[in-house]
Image 1 (cartoon, rainbow, N blue to C red):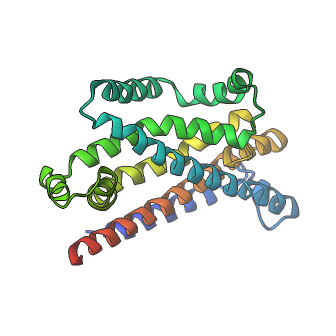
Image 2: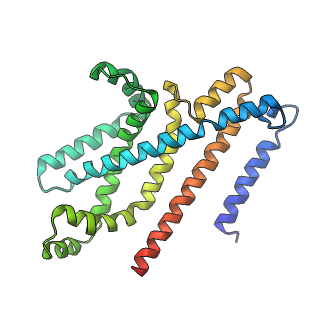
Image 3: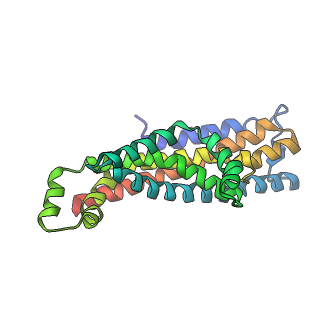
Amino acid sequence: MIPYRRLRSLTLLGLCGLVLGGCSAQWGWYVISPATESGKTNLLFLLGGLKYTIALSLTAIVISMVLGLLIALPGLSGRRPLRLFNRTYVELVRAVPILVLILWVYYGLPQVAGLSISVFAAGVIALALSDSAFQAEIFRAGIQSVGRGQLEAAQSISLSYVDTMRYVVLPQAIRRILPPLGNQLVYMLKMSSLVSVIGMQELTRRANELVVTEYRPLEVYSFLVLEYLILIMIASALVRRLEKAMRSDERFG
C-alpha cells in the first residue's frame, strides 16, 4: 500500500504534469512562461499576491482565535445572561455569509462609524469576525473536554480562575483542539480569496486582473489552483508537525 505522504506527493506531481502537459496548441501557457519576458512578468505578478494572502490569513486567524476564546468563556459560565450572550453572538455571526460580511464591513462600517478603513483592514475584520464564531465553539468544546477533576485540583491549591485557565485548562484544551484549529487556518486561506471583491491584491484578485488583460482564463486559473493547493498543503503539513510535537511533549512531560 502506498504511504499517504508518497501518495500526496504523487498526486501533486500528477496534477502539475496534467496542467503543464496542456502546453499544446489549444493552451496558451506562454502567458506565464518564465521562458519569455512577458510570461516572467505575469508570473511574478501572480506570485506577488502570496504575501497579501498569507498576511491577511494569518492576521485574521490570530485575531479570530483571541475573539473566539473571549466569546467561548461566557458560554461556560453558570450565569444565564453570559451564556445567552455567547449563544446569540455565535448564532448571529454564523448566519451571515462571509462575502456579505466583507462587503458590509468595507462599504457599510465606514458610514456607521465614520471611519476610513483600508481594504486590508476590512478584510481582516470581516474574516476574523466570521471565523470567531467557529473558534468560540471549538474552544468551548475543548475546554469542556478537560476533566472536572483538573478544575477541582486547581481549586484545592487556591489557583485563581485566570491561573486555572492559563496553567491547567487551556494547555490541555489546545492540544485537543489543534486539529480543528488547523482546519480553520486552511479555511481562512481559502476564504481570503473572497476579499478580492473589494480590491485586495491577493492571489485571486491578481489572477482576475491578468485574465482581463491576457484573455487566457484557463491557464491563469489553473496556475491559481496550483498556488492555493501548494499553499494549503504546506499549511496542513505545518499543523500536523505541530500536532506531533505537542503529542510528544505530552507523552514525555
